[in-house]
Image 1 (cartoon, rainbow, N blue to C red):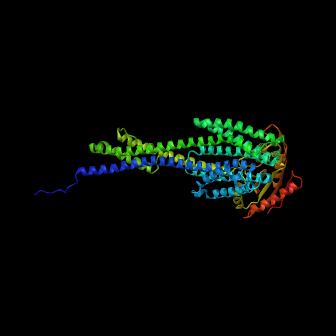
Image 2: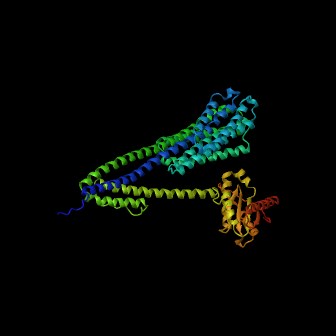
Length: 571
C-alpha cells in the first residue's frame, strides 16, 4: 500500500510570488524616484507662480507711482473739472485701479491693499478738489499736499511687495535675489519720479525750493544714485543681452539726460526763472523715466523665462522618469522570468537600500554591485534618490540659517549695528525676572539736527555709527547698548557692574566729547551729549518706570544746558 505525501505547491508558484514581491519593491523604488522629480517640478511651478504674483504686486506699485506724472501735469494746466481729468490722468487712474484689482483675490494682501486704496481715494479727492478750481485759485500748499499724498500712496504699496517677497522666501524660492533687484528697479523709478515732483511743487509755488524741500530733494537724489549703483553691480553680472541693453538705455535716458533736465530746472528756479510751467516740465521729464520701466520689464521677463525653462525641464524630467520606470519594470519582469538566481539577490539588496533611505540613513553611500542593463538603472535611481534626500536636508539647513539671519536682522539697527529699540524692550522682561536692580541711561547727541542740516544725512549717519562704536567700547560686554531712535541711545546696566550708574554715564558723556567726529568729506565736527539715568528694582512694570524716570532726567539735562548727566530716583 503506497503512502501518499502531502502535495506541495509547485515551484513556479513560489517563483511567481517572488516575482510579484520583487516587482512591488521595484515599483516602490520607481515611485520614490518619481516623487523626487515631481517635487522638483512642483517647486519649479510654485516658484514661477510666486514670481508672477510678485510681479503683479510690483505692477500695482508702479502704476501708483506713474499716476503722479499725469496728476502733476493736470494740476499745472489751466483746465477745470472733467476737462482737467480727461485724457492722461483718467487713463492713469484706470490703469492703477486695474492693477490693484488683480491683487484683490489674495487674502494675505487684504490689509495693506485696503490701506493703499484708502490713501488713493483721499489723495484723488484732494486732487479733484484742486482741479475743480481755476488754475490761479489753486493753493500751492494744497498742490504740495496732494503730491505728497501720491508719495504716500506708493509708500503704502511697499507692504504689498514685502508680503509677496515673504511668500517667495517662505515657499523656498531661489529667486529672492532677482525679486529684490526688480523691487529696487521699481524704487528707482519711483524716486526718480519724486525728483520731478519736487520740481513741480516748486514751479507751482512760484519760488525756489524751501530748505525742507531742498533737503528732501537731495536725499531723494542720493537714494536714486545709491539704487543705481547697486543695480549696476547686481544686473551687469548676470543680465541677459536685452536687460543689459535696457540698463544702458536707462543710464543714457535718465541717469544722464533725465537728471540733467531735473537739475537744470532746479537751477533755473534757484536763479528766479519763473518761466517754467508744470505741463511743459512734466512733458519733458516723464519720457526720461520710460527706460527705467523697460529695464524692470526686461529684467522680470528674463527671470520669468528662466523659471519657465526650469519648470519645463522638470516636467520633461518627470515624464522621462515615469517612462523609464515603466520600461524598467517591464524589462525586470522578463529578466526575472529568464534567471531569478542572477537577479533575485540584487533586488533584495536594493530593497534594503530603499528601507535604509526611507529611515533617513543617508550617510552611507548606496551600494552598487556589478550589474548591467536595467538593474544598473535601478541602483542609479537609488543614488539619485539619496542625492535628492541629501539636497533636501541641505536646503532645510539653509532655510533655517536664513530664518536665524532674518531674526538677527530684526533685532539689529541697520545703521549702527547695535540693538534696536524693539530688541531692547524684548530683553527687559528677562531682566525683570531677576532680583537685582537695573539701571537705564538715555543718551541724546546734542544739536544733532544741525549735522544733517549742514553736512547732509550721509554725514549724520557716519556720526551715529562712530558714536555707537565709542559707546560700545566704553561699556562692559554684558551692558546692553541700543539705538533708541534718531540720535538717542539707551544703555541697560545691571547691579552686577559694581560701578555707580552716574560714573558710567559721565564716562559715556566724556567719550562723546573727547574728540571730534570724522565726516565723509574729510571734515571734523565736535559734539556733546546729554544723559539721563534712572534705576529700578525688578518688577512687572520696571521698564515703564525706568523709561519715564530716565526720560525725565534727560529732559532736565537738556533744559539745564546740555552736555551733562542728570540722575533720577527711578521707579
